[in-house]
Image (cartoon, rainbow, N blue to C red):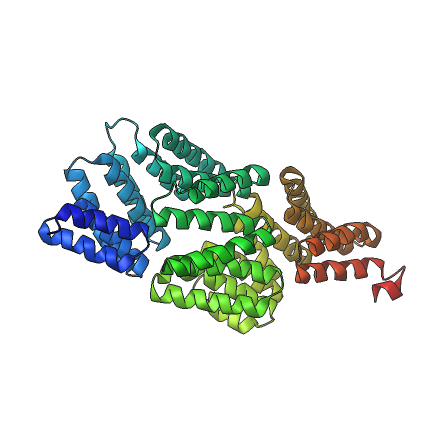
Length: 442
């Protein structure tokens, strides 16, 4: 006859094998024999992957209380960090901060352990500035290596790599991300949730850096992983990121299908995670010229960080450049140290300020973009900087000065396989040379 210990081991094996229903049943049998922190935590993870997110959070909250009562401080902190992040994803910032504080309190007067590393991971995810993210993630990685916590090390490596890419240090960031995935591939990760988040960090970093080929390759692998392991919440997030790749590379019908699928998944499981997906769909609608649809998608989301850029692009398309510039300037204040985030906003800000007649301000934004291109060495940043410089020169009446950066932008966007952006660069080049060579311009 199976004992509660046998059922606990069976539940853990089922989690590692991504057999969520079997895990749920095994842990339920454990609880029938008596209360168990490990069983509550296992049920919480199984429920989360099955899409019962609220129930999963409640189960892990119960696990935390039991871990604290048993003075299992390491496990208590790790569980509280997970709950904190779920609240953060759900837009409940106050609850997220409260649970992070509970994690830290569980570790009071405790020697350095993996729990301190998990708290550092969550501090990194709560950080506003990229350099703070890097500092906390680096601490988490150090603690992981000191304590031999493999899951924590992979998580910290992927988080640190993504932050380094955001900061404009692509080579360093990519090395860390690939190290994380090598560790994962070697079987050092036992928790499927940790592996899923490491995948997410990798493809988000590739996408933000304009590494479309690598991002597409990883998106396909993650999509297969999500299907194979029935990780519904991951599937929605992955498809949103993949849609960025599809939009940038001109595959708009595929992007629309990916975004609609992601929205359906979020609506069913975690509606609060749908905000970035809605913003991406709104941007696609703007590119398609379907402005009323974009407006409807963004209504009521004016204060959502993910919607700021989309709203600004919509205002530019509606010939309201002053409103667009104000939105972009506000967004830039929140991109401390984030080269890739700033790049997206600065490129649009150049366009908005030119439309306002503020050529000095447009030139300043273009110069900042140029500085980011030089310090980061990233092809996507350089391409956007060249296009911005061409636009400022043309708006200032310097057609000759705009031709060369327009040519460089055209070549760069061509290499990056970004057809719409290449088309915009080609148009600026035509404007630059039409006085001297109208046939070529046409």
